[in-house]
View 1 (cartoon, rainbow, N blue to C red):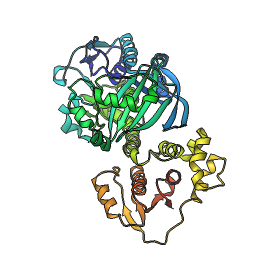
View 2 (cartoon, rainbow, N blue to C red):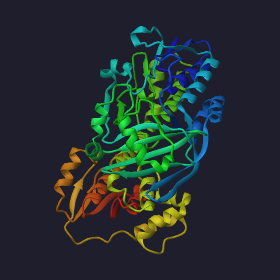
View 3 (cartoon, one colour):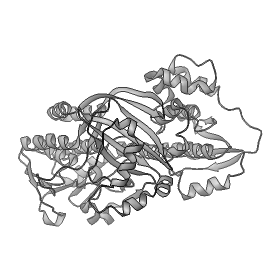
View 4 (tube, rainbow, N blue to C red):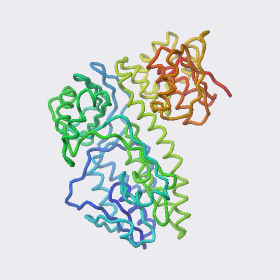
Length: 491
């Protein structure tokens, strides 16, 4: 028997795929909430890449999920009175409750047994394999913490999940100030009558507005109505007379979780129970469903459970680790948004699109040539019309080398807003120019670009980043997005 703890997207999809691959095996899902309990959450996003992966593993599931989804919204950045496009219609969104309904139906069709309203622990179950899909606060992970090697870090920014009772005409990011507060909304439609409205703020607003007092006065399981009133006022234009929908909505800080090992004994972890990645780059649902595909394939046709678990982790860890790295850079970009929100909209757009290092200036210019052209205007004339020639052009538009003394910094720590970075930045207070160097792995390269941006945003020092030639495109994108003034390339 294979038991699955958790009836979210990860658990339900894994159960269906395992049962399809092993029809003679009993597969049971234990979900702590009863079928009469309202599902928490609003809409979740799914990229076409994820949908392609689902279609390859289970065409019928892909078809049903797509049919239940709201398709085709584009993405815009809105700052004050300006609105600029970021990319065209290429995303899907689906209500979490609707997604669970589809996956429940698919699991039952495959012959999976679902036991709702049963809060079980590992010790309560006798099974050959136990799949721990019990979410970000996984009790199963807590039991095996020593064997798994659990790492958790808490974000600096604050966020709140809400919804609206109308479909916004396009997905957008919007920042608004109200009194002493700065707030950001991430909104996208997930049905013809509903949108997700994810709100963010920072510690400066938390302290200045007294949001902490509102939070302390909000009872467990209730929504922070005083904060919701402020947010409704701040985003009055975006809401257009509608209200924010709340479901135990209150401020929280994002928890990034990782494991040294994804399995122990006969228990294997997937989805948020195994790893989390910041929501500003993608959804945990994406990672969870792709985990389910890999685990079901690893378990198929073998009785060697340890070997199957090892294969699953070997296949999934590299893409998950890369996604987490990109998501962490995106998280830190948003957590420092206060330092850039007053820049021209096109400049913010270019910085946003290249923030994680996985997209280049050329990528953005191909999709949104007018926005890219406006963002690049500060580099001067002669901009080539062919996006493939932008790297060479940007190299000729960098800030000239300086004769001033240059402070050398060796850096590799991804968290460029942590205490170690604080110490470095403080030591550079009188520096006129700073050169950052370090290892050549992806994490270290991104880290010194991000530290250069912090120095540039908070001082008048010129910033120079040394990079391997393989990262030339990321370097030119950093120059164009004003993360640094110059790059130096080496073989």
